[in-house]
Length: 144
Image (cartoon, rainbow, N blue to C red; front, side, top):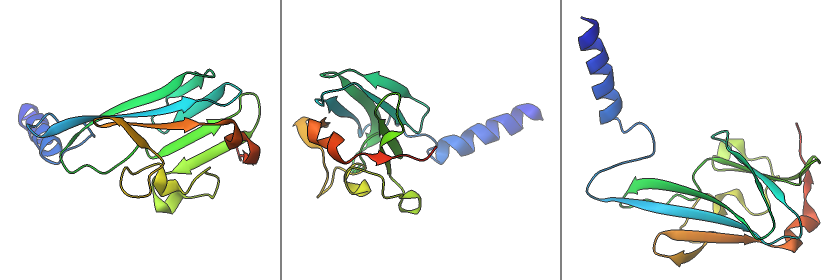
């Protein structure tokens, strides 16, 4: 009996498309790059619990595998860019219900590759945004 329940749960999850990776015949890999060209190292955190210190000149990169017709951006629904050892930085959200007004651009520009995006396509399905020194001029005091 348990075997049938587990099989049924697996089939339901599989048929609903849980997760963000697909392996169908029309799937494509998209790569997103944030390049740190500021004058200081930056701490970048995504909502998947991924936190990386990105030295000057280095990149924060993520990949997502999706079906044709995808128009999303980045690989998560939250992004925080913080100056290490301070509470200063930016916090951006991909859901309108979470917007805090603490992003360096309009939030939707980070989470889409449609018209108005901040990303530049540098290769097929590879998008990049360069973080420049003037980004640090208007950082916010981030809440805990």
